[in-house]
Length: 249
Image (cartoon, rainbow, N blue to C red):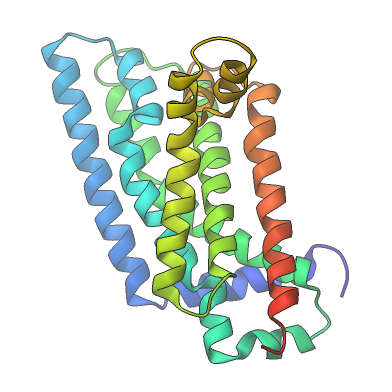
């Protein structure tokens, strides 16, 4: 089969399989608990300093309180997507079907992205609750959610690529977490070290917190979106090549 259909079939099969795993429900429960706790903390702090609802809305998309649980959850989501297939040998069976490595890699990524979107379902609820405290900018909220999907998708693609490196799911989770954390933190340190000049411009452009903040302000910047979108394409392509290399091993 050609076109996107094989990738969608892989994604559908993998997503159904994911929700049959107890780990998926543990991740969902834990992440929803921690993001709910983070939301309560933001609202409490904002109440102390009398911050308007629009500032709390921006914090919802950019605060480290919300992203730290996601940085842990994304590698856990991705760790089994390919490593488990390699461990059980089913990846070879899958590749005997009329499907390419690129389609398998894309399907696996889309399955992980689908689960990630489920993880984000409380955020519209948080926005509704914020609307009770004051005015919420709906356009900025939609842009902020788009920014979360793009940046989270970038992290997820890196974690899926880590899953293609090994047969061991624990190793895949550790490598994925290191990769995701590096993508999140490295530009922050880089921009601090290069406080001026061209390198500072480069690090600033790679700073995903700035990307999230730009989108949270309601600015859908194609320049800001280019980096995470390019990163997704790169890591999905790299995952496909790793699957190709690992065939028969």
